Length: 398
Ligand SMILES: *Cc1c(COP(=O)(O)O)cnc(C)c1O
Image (spheres, protein in one colour):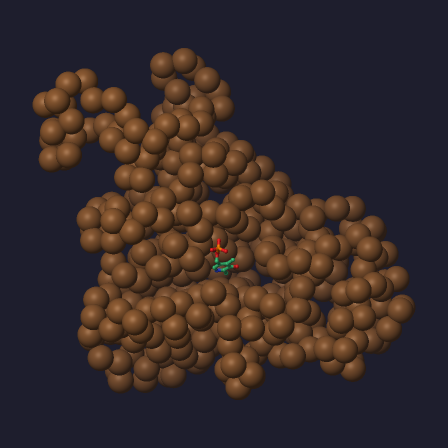
């Protein structure tokens, strides 16, 4: 329960990275400070806190001790200076974009992203006079062209592995390119988690997570976070965060701290099971294509090997016969749950084109590799024999 030692390994950090839990009581589990407001010692103390001349808590939209503990923990795991928790992954992305960009500015986003991120780029952000340019970030020349053409470009953001087609982007190369043009570089690390990939080691300025997914790991909370410099967070608090109110709830922070303790073992199990599922599907006669960064057939397998210490729990595939056959498969599974979201202990299966990525137009889906017959599995940590049996029996129905 002592101070954080930066030399600790990742599993130790996952359990102890938030530092001393509660000095007042010695509670081993971080207490849930379910309090909206915090008492001032006197009127002058309140005034000092508001002027930033004293340190302490004021109101939970600004900061909260349980949320602070989670922020320290995620910053420790990503190897960044500071963390910030949000009500959701979308709130995290929105706050980061609006901190860097104001009316007249633009930013570059990779083209294959979470459906909500695409909708944010296309429908929400333009209402503030900020333009998002989505480009195929597997092609560095296209990214450089887009940066050169963009007006007052401030930010380069991308997702790797990408949702849903699992394209892998070269973090080091994109960071270098972004920095060459003076851009802030943000990586959505939701699919990989800090256990498998730490973009800050490649120079990324901001790492973003939908903490709803692997960080929680149990399908019981919606939350988001970023890890970045203290300077960026101070600017974000002042310019956007405090007055738009996308704060993380203390109970969410507590669930995430609980989830993080087991993230190294969970990720190991997800990787093992997903590898088995990918190999099973790759040899199945009813399957057309399989995408998993760990397969030698994956177009960016070499980049994945370079920047990831494991290939994650997500597998996507296309079935011979298209979406009609895909529907039959999803209706035939018995162990797997047909649902959006990912990263839970439970195996989840979904059809991105009609659900998570229905925010894209059909043409945009084609460009982004969100094929109509693509099925996405978030491989859980059940016994692998049971997961494979389930897929096998479902495929037999087709
Ligand atoms: C789910 C998801 C998001 C959005 O996060 P929410 O917590 O649902 O707001 C962003 N990026 C990726 C890669 C996601 O999977």
